[in-house]
Amino acid sequence: MSKKTAAVIGVGVIGLSTAILALERGYNVTIYSDKPLMETTSLKAAAYFKPYAVAHNDLTQGMLEIAWEYYEQLISQYGDVSGVRKHVHWEARSSLEENEDTYYLDVMEEVTYVEQSHVPGGYAFGRRYRTFLMDTPIFLPWLLQRFTEAGGTLVLLDKKFNNLGQLAELATDVVFNCTGLGARELCHDEAMIPIKGQIVIVDPQPSMDWSIRTDDFYIVPRKYDTVLGGTAEWHVNDETVEPETVDRIIQGSKPILPHLNLNSVRRTYAGLRPYRADGIRLESQEVNGKQIVHNYGHGGAGLTLCWGSAYRALQLV
Image (tube, rainbow, N blue to C red; front, side, top):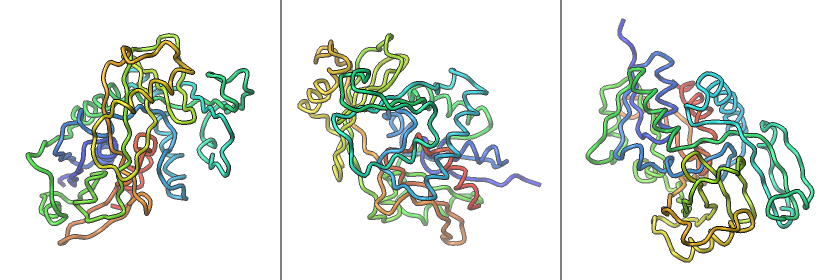
């Protein structure tokens, strides 16, 4: 009896995680993408395990818990070779946020509230906890290698799919739509909103074995470099890097890394987070007799929720 087949549209982290879980469920899987992995939004992420710019509801809470367990298993089985590790993350504030939703702390380890004199950068309020760091230039190629070595296929398209009817024509039993911001055009989904983030890359910081989110910025040290960012420009659909924003990011990082200046900058880029105003779209649709499972709209939480989201997507088949 032949295996069932699955097509996954998109090679970002949502597509990769969905494709890998489909392989584990026994499907023959092909990923279709109009861009290579190293040009995806996922590759541009810092990234540490914490949901950002995504609705909190029972669905995302369940995804969060499943994803945490999957990352635990991943580092237990593969260790640092995967590009994922546990480390300390700080949240530092000049003032307390009113009505702050801290539901995500339920899954974090060693949550501690810290007095001002012990908060990095001298911020008035701070908390720290252990979470996962995903070093995306290592983690995502490792995932793709894991996918192909397990028998998966990646097809790079000359042009993107324009409508769901084209997905229905694929010679496969089920299609997983993991197109992120591309779903706005593909599905005519007006709820999809870009959130532009501008990024500055500087040298590695060997003495900094923790990451931090402050009032306006974040600093994430990785193996080969350090990511500075934290900007959020809603409804902005271009990826132009603005010199004044680069300077603002550098200045905002100085309370933590006072030696930084514009000469510290290795490179800059911008990315568009795929936020969905109606929440993550995770549902099955039949188009011309073909089952299409939509799995998109994760905002700034793709790398955090991907395994939980992929698990829920496979449950719909």
